[in-house]
Image (cartoon, rainbow, N blue to C red; front, top):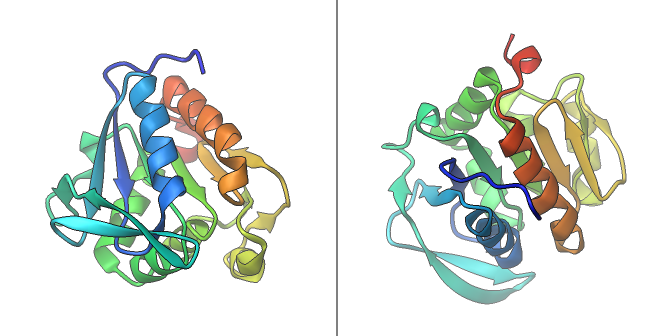
Length: 187
């Protein structure tokens, strides 16, 4: 990836139970492209990752969700895994945080089960999105058109299906951050 996003600040919203590669791969790609990345969470200390059903690494929380403000970031990443988005989709502070990015027209990236958070935030109506196939009906019930593609971009919302799509997901995420705000979406 050749896009330089030096000086951009990115939030990765997560809690316990995220799919390890869906947080670590975008984080590392964003840092390699010059961004500052912070893990934002309703939890403090360290978060437990999973590699499907097995425990993975622990990742440090950089900022508490209660202290984080969307206006301080250029984009947000929503990693999947089964437990992580299922907990965040019912957390009102997490939903408000994500809605603020969408309202401001800032890039929002969600992979695997991550689009569950977007569905519960009420920001998918009229959008084209992909995800892990098991949440297809949730995405469609939220008003989006679900497609089975490696990576989908709909006016600043980047979505992918599974860890096998991470290379394309990361590239599109960095491209969207490089492009900046999407005024049409913010209007």
